[in-house]
Amino acid sequence: METPMTKTNKIHPHKFAMWVAIGSISMMFAGLTSASIVRHAQGNWVYYALPSLFTYSTFCIVASSITMIMALRSFKKGMVARSQNMILVTLLLGIAFGILQYMGFKALYAQDIRVDGNPSESFLFIIAGLHLLHILGGIVALFIVFIRNKIKGLNNKNATGLEVIATYWHFVDLLWIYLFSFFLLNQ
Image: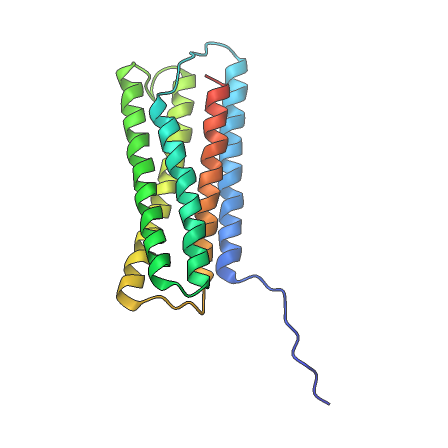
């Protein structure tokens, strides 16, 4: 007697690896923000205002998450051109985020707030700088997907790759919102 095939609820290995990476990255930033709080309690903390460029960069990263949602939805509906356009817009917004962050760091340096200064300054530069490195990783992944899709075309039968990148991109977006809120509350 034949048994009907049953659907398993297994997670794709790439998605599993992404969730493990997200867990690791989350723990790293939780440790860094916790260390900042502990160090803050020890005194000798300098307070400063964050440049408005960091607020503008936040709008860019939130908008890029929205365009990533649109890219994935378009992909799943077979709207190839729209999906590719939304991937490009997401990529450009990610680059804009990075540029605004860089300009924000330059503005901080102009105010004599430096990575090798007071511990409050060091924590800001290290935490935000590490986040920016994770954004750059996402930008590289988006660029690769965009170019690969241009060359090979989109295959809307398998959305796993785009889903993995979308998950990562939304994660670094939420991570920045957490970090930006943390910085605003501790300035």
